[in-house]
Length: 165
Image 1: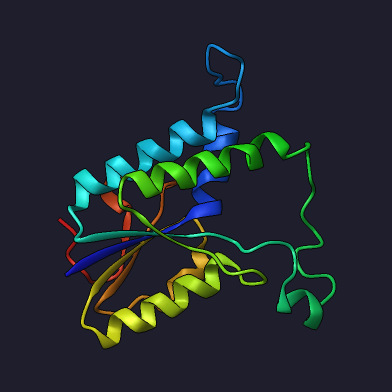
Image 2 (image 1 turned 90 degrees about the vertical axis):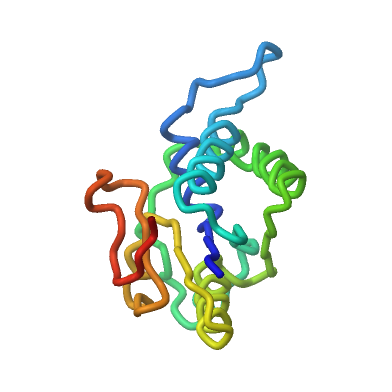
């Protein structure tokens, strides 16, 4: 079995900034939605997985923030992200209609959920492809798990030992 785990907020946010001016005929922002859906379809066609799962960040509260109050404190907020957050509901609805499972837990980041899923997949002998530009996932690569980054070119897009083609 081959499973793809998508870092939901990471990929949606990348598409939001990649396509910031894309709007519907009614003026509704659709860049993150369009880009995310295109990504899911590309991954489905390229890797032909048995299952696709999307992990989402679960809100503002985080045990990391309690342990280290400056966690992510160096990140600048360049704009009001309401336009982005408004699209997340649509993206989740599209995932549901495509039978793409979504994981979300208040206070947990997608990173935590992805790591847990990888461990669970190892025990079940599942080949796992993590799709994210977050290189922190590189520490989870092994003979059953690879990291595919949207920011690299075709010939270098797979880090790890798993044959994905």
